[in-house]
Amino acid sequence: MMNLNSISLSETNVVTSSISHELNTPLNAIIGFTDLILEEESLEDIKSFAAIIKNNSSLLLDKIQKVIALNSLDYENDVFLEEVSVSVLLEKSQDIIAKEFGRNKRMFSINCNPTAEEQSITVFSDKPKLEKFLNHLLLSAFYLNKEGQVFLSFNIVYKDGVKEALQVLVSEEQLANFGEQKSSFEEDIDAAVSKLRFEDGIGINLAICHKISKKIGGHMYLKINSNNKVISFELPVGNLYGANSHQDTGIKVLVVEDEPVSCCALERVLADYPFMVIRTSAQGIIAGAAERLAKTDIVIINEEIKEMPVRNAIDRLIKKNPEVSFLIEESCFNRESDIFIRHNNFFYYCRYSAEAQIESALDRIMKYRDKETTNTYKQSLNAG
Image (tube, rainbow, N blue to C red; front, side, top):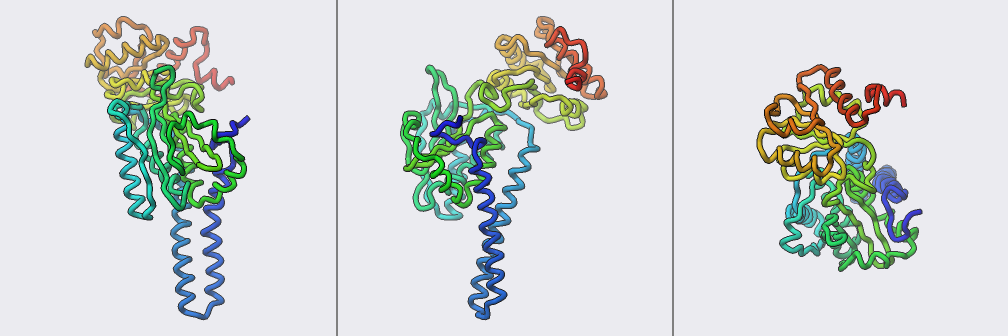
């Protein structure tokens, strides 16, 4: 059953209804004023109607482009993890707000005074996707309250004294200690949603936000009561793509490479497996990207790992998750290194190998993970 004080955007048709309304409103205006022009004799009125048609045509085009962008997200499956600090996100938000204020003169207050320690807190995320998320989140926020200010705050969520998540809130009214106020959001949700459906502009932006939030491992909710509307987003500091994530199930593969090898047969082979593929750079794995993931099943390394920081990162990951397996491009390692002698869960491939050879390497990894597997992994998939 849906929590009465929280609307998950995947559990209601609020977004779909709003998108339909957002498209139909300018379309109906275009059709209606076109009919009026055909009947009107006054040149002044014709010019006025033409201006309305032009404005609504621009609005409709903008909405259509956003719907296309929304649908294209279904095909953007790559996630590239890098370290992002709260201070960088705050700076990006200020840039977005300044541009929007210059465009429509709306007031937007940043209620955000993180401590020096909080500003230095980092999350691992796909930075371009996270910035796109912030952009559409803030555009949505402008429609929460058409008359007055809307508020943005960044918070760090703690659990048992441990940093659990970065929380981003946008709200119609200023909030303090939102975690303590959640129980107050218990008003008539259906009535609140019916109002929100016709807040022109919020539906498509929220739909884009929702899709991006799932792809980057976050959780997004809409919380409403009679006095306030709040869009809440939480991105785990650790345990990324863990419990409660829509991508919690399945095998997670972390590919470590600074520049993607587009011609490599490995990419074509990976597409045939039901893996969730996450990418990071050598610097990303050194900084702890693999350890921030809730689970890393396979690590594919396409960057040279002779340097001690990378080897230390591999050792840390093995200590955290002894079951992890490694598939290493053979030109990227030193066979004499003790790190390869100490572990038997290292497998190798050549980026210039044929697809069948790379499939064989992946099947060896899957057999290592499941000692009783007799068929190749792909054969077992096909067998159901």
